[in-house]
Structure formats: C-alpha cells, structure tokens
Amino acid sequence: MVRLVCQVLFSPQQVLFLPCPSDQQRFYLNGTSVVDPLHLKYLRFSGRIIGLALMHRVQVGITLDRTVFLHLAGRSITLEDISVADPITYASCKRILEMDAAVVDGLELTFSRDVHVLGSRSTIELCSGGKDVHAVESMSMEQQRQLLFFWTSVKYLPSDGFGGLASKLYIYKTSESAAHLPSSHTCFYRLCLPPYPSLKVMKNQLQKIAQEHVSYSFGTW
Image (cartoon, rainbow, N blue to C red; front, side, top):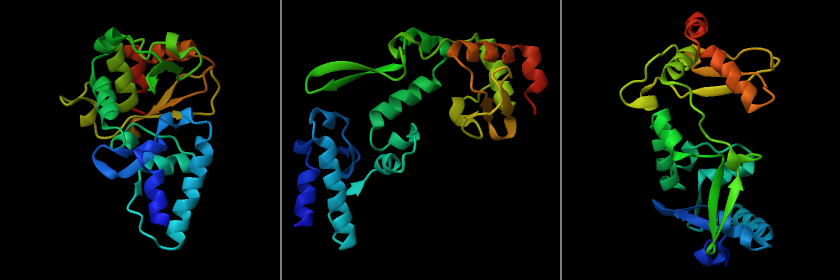
C-alpha cells in the first residue's frame, strides 16, 4: 500500500515532484507546486509516507535528489548541487561563468528570473529591485586581472578558464567594519568581505583593491 501511495504522490499529475532528466527514479521538488494552495500539506504528507516506508523498510523505488535534503537541512543550494536535477540550467550558468565579462554585459542579465507556470509568465526578483540591477557591472579586463591576483595570487586564468584553477573561488563574510578594505587568503582562494551597507560601497572598495599597486602589495598574503 505504501509503495502504491508513493507512486501516486510522485507522479507528474500531482505536480509535487519532478524526475531528474538523467534518472527518472530520482526526484526533486517541483517549483510549480505552489499553484495548489494545499501543496505544503501534500508535501508534509509525502514526508510522512516516506518516513513510514523507511520505518518498515519498504522499498518504494524512489530516490530523493540531493537538493531535497539540502532544503530539509536548511542549507543553501549551490550551482554544483543542481547538476543532476536541472542539467540545462546548470550548463547554461556554467557557460555564463566562463564567458568574458564584456560578453556577459551584452546579455544584460539582472538579479531576476522568469518563471512559467501553467502557461502564464511572471518575473521573480532575487533581491529587492533585482530586475533593475545588472548581474555584472564589470571592471576593465586589467582590473579583473588585479582582483584575481589579489584573490588567488594567479593573475591570468588557465586556458580552460576558472575550471583550470587549483580550487574553487570562495567569498567569506568577515566581522570587520565596513570601513575596512576586502582581504584575502590566496592559499585557499578566499576573498573576505566586511558587511558593506550597499552594493555601491562594496564595488568602490573592490575598485580600490583592483588597482595594480594595491593588488601586488596585498595579493600574496
């Protein structure tokens, strides 16, 4: 009985979960489930059924994607986490990250996304006023090189782009006042930013770091 109930809950008709394109037995949360005002109750019921199956060791033939467990744990979901659940979005974002800044500027990206639900389209802002904020307000290529050097002690990217670096790039929040400049731990590819009060202030502080004499002075710490 539990197995049959799970098959119904995870069927496309219920709009609660979607199968991963590369694994039809692996499911992640369907963002369009919000069209049903009772979707949270259905998801809670689904969790109880899965818990019942686990308690009685009933194999229901369903695997939950990593993103579901990250949601349950209250953890942030990174780009790498969605590679199985949404490979198209993953590949698209990876291509954008590997593009030159000038090319990305031409895409006119903003902190918003278009969502299509049952034939209707709406725009969701990823931050306040996000549809009017560009994803990239790029520095010059030379400033980008200086910032990369300050961040990693590497001034030029390898031929295969960021993927060729020895580590991912990390950004950390520090407890220093907003009057401080950013700092870095180049051995660990960490850029440390104080809690700046606005995007404009942060950009101005990064512009200071991107000056050649500054990045060369501090980039090797």
